[in-house]
Each structure stands twice: as structure tokens, then as C-alpha cells.
Image 1 (cartoon, helix red, strand yellow):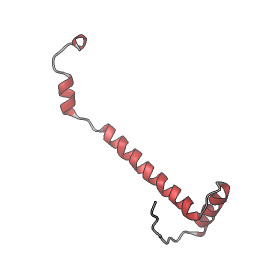
Image 2 (cartoon, rainbow, N blue to C red):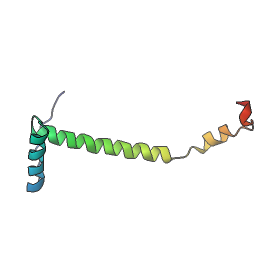
Image 3 (cartoon, rainbow, N blue to C red):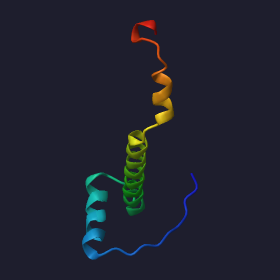
Image 4 (tube, one colour):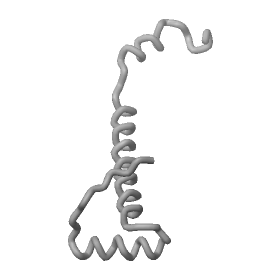
Amino acid sequence: MHAEKVSISLPADLAEFVEQYKTAHACKSRSQVIGTAVNLLRQRELEQAYRAAAQEQDTDFDITTADGLPHEAW
């Protein structure tokens, strides 16, 4: 996997958390911790998008399921 170098600045408390997380979870680097955090954010965004899509109603599909056949005829 190709990695792109990015420089970030964090408040002291977040930088300390990253360091503590790295040690507690045997991560190889702070970059691995930040990568894990970004992947979790991406996953959360995808879950929200799937939830929103699942809530959309397709009225055309509803019309096709109510085609006049009794349920037993399926």
C-alpha cells in the first residue's frame, strides 16, 4: 500500500491520547493510530449513508408488489 505523508497538528491532550493508545494497543506508530481513527470515521460515514438509503422509499416498487394478485397466488 502506498502511503502519503501528511503533517498534522493536534492539541496536547489529543497528542497524548494518541501516544497512550499506541503504547496500550502495541501500534507500530502514531501514524497507525491516526489511520485507525480515520478508518473508523469513514466507516461511520458509510453506515450513516446506508441508514439514510435504507429509509428512502421506492414507491414504484410498492406499486409492483400490489399488482392485484392475492398473497396466496405468489
